[in-house]
Length: 237
Image 1 (tube, rainbow, N blue to C red):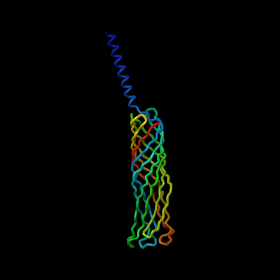
Image 2 (tube, rainbow, N blue to C red; image 1 turned 120 degrees about the vertical axis):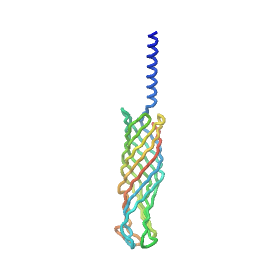
Image 3 (cartoon, rainbow, N blue to C red; image 1 turned 180 degrees about the vertical axis):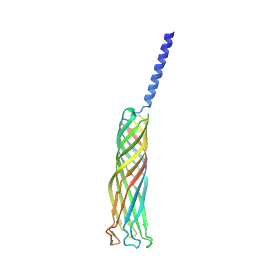
Image 4 (cartoon, rainbow, N blue to C red; image 1 turned 45 degrees about the vertical axis):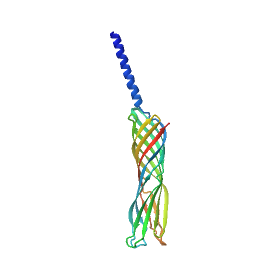
C-alpha cells in the first residue's frame, strides 16, 4: 500500500513538473532569425534656418525662422536578430520610408506691404541602417536602436516677384530610438517604436539674384531633424 501511494505521488510530481515545463516552453519565444515587414506611422520634420536674401528691400537684413512638416510615413523594413543566453537579443535592421511631407515659412516685409519671402522644406524619402539590442521577456522584446540615417530633402524659395530657387540633396545623419516588440505567432511579431534623427546643417540654398538685383550673400542655411512614431508588423523566416 505504501509502495502504491509512493508510486502515485512520484507520478503526480513528474506530471506536474512536465506540465510546468511545457507551459514555460509555450511562453518562450525564439527571436533568432531574419524578418521582413511593413510599417506605418507619423513623421514630424523640422528645420531652423537663417536667411539673408532681401538686401534690395527697405526692411533688408538677416532673419531666422522655423519650418515644420508633418505627414503619414509608410515604409518597409528588413532585418536579422540573434538571441543569446540570458535572453539578450541583438541584430541589425534596414528600413525605407516615404514621408513625402512639406512645410512652409513666410517672411513678410514690414515696410513694403505685399512683399514676402517664402521657404518650403521638402522631406521626400527617408531610410536608415541600425543596430538593435534588447532583452526578451517571454513574448515581449523591449529594445533600443541606433545607427545612420539618410534622407532625400530639399529647400525651395519663392516671392511675390516670381523669383524661384530650389535645391535637393541626399543627406546622412544619425538616428536613435527604442520600442517594444511582441511575438504574436512563432513567425509573426508586431511592434511600436520611436526614432529621432538629426541631419545636422543639411540645408544650404543660394539666392544670388532677386528682381534683377544681384546679391552675392543671398541665401539660406538650416538644420534638419525628424521625429517618427510608428507601428510595424514583421514576418519571421
